[in-house]
Picture (cartoon, rainbow, N blue to C red):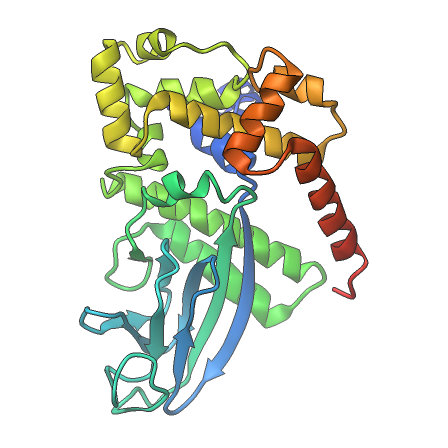
Length: 322
């Protein structure tokens, strides 16, 4: 990882050269969207069903209970941030006990006061590379509230979100969603500090041997990388490098390189007007036909069709009332 500057006037180069985590999240087009569940009184239950997103909840005030299949109910307090990396079905309610089972709308013996809850989800532009990212995270993460692990940064972000919702000043929608992005980044930082990232892409970024390799791949996907070159960057033998990479990320290094190149190719197809030949060169392919063949093998459709489909989707979205 990049060395932190020791004094404020040494920050210029660091700001011009993104660190590995920043570069990764930028390329994956991380976005956050928040929805306000509102103030909940009396007996209530929220049943979260799969939305194919990465849901999170912020408890603004009061208390609640988190219910998961096969686990004891977990009490939530004001200021808690709950993130579900696997989009696991869950129930949040006013009660420690549900009457009949997970998902039932009835509960009893709950908290009698008012609880405010803010819900939202994180998503990535490229879902194919998403799995190695989420494999780093525990299925459920609870941070930030009273007596919980999690630094003042998360508490401060939660406070900013709640304050903004209380005032609804112009630009509040964009402001709150940007705060959501910061919540994700701070969640990763906290998990690193707590040494809870064991496997997956995020874990690899903080590995002293694999971090430089991943940073090089992310920064220069079009370079003619060989297994020997990548192993050299990790200062490991080929066999040790492959074993360590597979153990951390769950796939071989050259397979990851191919997936990352396709992730970059899809981003260029969606976001730029570059020619197929230029995109092929930028993503490490010797010729346009080789790129087209590799793209179809990984993505399932030709790159031209992928670009056309995304343009059509973007056009329909821009014409919608929302």
